[in-house]
Image 1 (tube, rainbow, N blue to C red):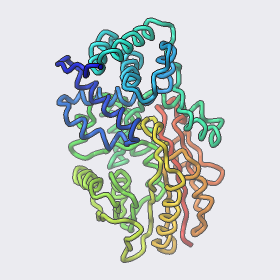
Image 2 (tube, one colour; image 1 turned 180 degrees about the vertical axis):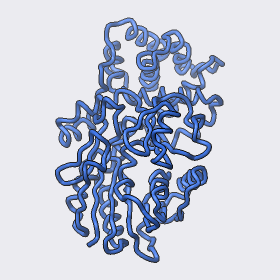
Image 3 (tube, rainbow, N blue to C red; image 1 turned 120 degrees about the vertical axis):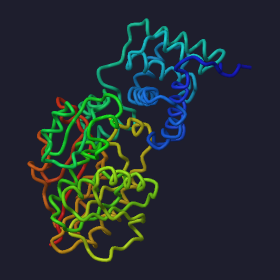
Image 4 (cartoon, rainbow, N blue to C red; image 1 turned 90 degrees about the horizontal axis):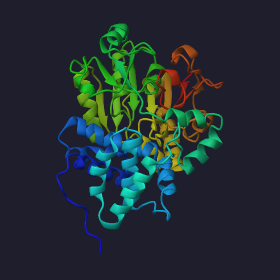
Length: 420
């Protein structure tokens, strides 16, 4: 009978235990990492240790197929996919090969997670891989089901998408005042790819950066800013932000002069939206309600529907989405019903933008083709970041392989219609 894992006070061991808990929750239960991480990280006191927990977890998920290939190449009998020994080996190898932590430190903080035979096996496999010639490829291998879907949908883009997943993305900031773009880019030491945008290399806590406390900016991927930009300046007109939390789009619209109603059914996520509005000094009417049960008192001049989706377009930022089985058909039904409902709430001449942070065509292109309640309003090239062109239909389709020389971009789909 094997003994339980050794409980000791080795420095760094709580970090690895936390990473193991997160990996177990994602891989066994399919939990979204951003939902399960906060309670686990509360047990980690230091900010840099919390960052290390996330780095270990995300790099393990990002490179898991290739880490498994190295593990299988060093074992005579294949370890079960759900075995603790395999998961511990994955996170140990991710630290050594991706985070470039010293192997002796990886061993000292990894092996205590196991006991008995699995511990000895993990030590032998880790040592064999580190000393052997096999290394990780230049781009991560996609999980089989993901690769199958994307080969069918984006055959010519899959290689570039995988390359775009190889490293954690930079940090994108959206400015409250787009006219101050050059000033903030210089002050923060970043680069701008569009007015109102600054891109920074990943380093430290964003809360410590200049401008955070005064609400001069918020974190938001460049692709995620495009849908709100497609509505233009508000000039006091009324806009509805559907599925608004955590608030990036709401703040964009408020900063652009719209009178914003921000609707989301998650009261918890709306608390974060209110905190962001307070920090930035922007205003919006916040409504906690289900869009299928809620009814506005009067129609809107603009509606932004960033619909619930599989979020596979955010895989470079959230690699756990690659390992969850997406309910594409179920979400597509929800998206169709929300589009139809949103179209009823527009004034004549009003504009509707539909967006999803998904690489699944069922959630993007197929929805736009099927939606005929409003007149298409094609997106123009000058409305998009340089290097991203509209599709022939006048839609936005980005993927993580685009803007590679500038740090990449999330995968997004957006389309626009007008009520005649």
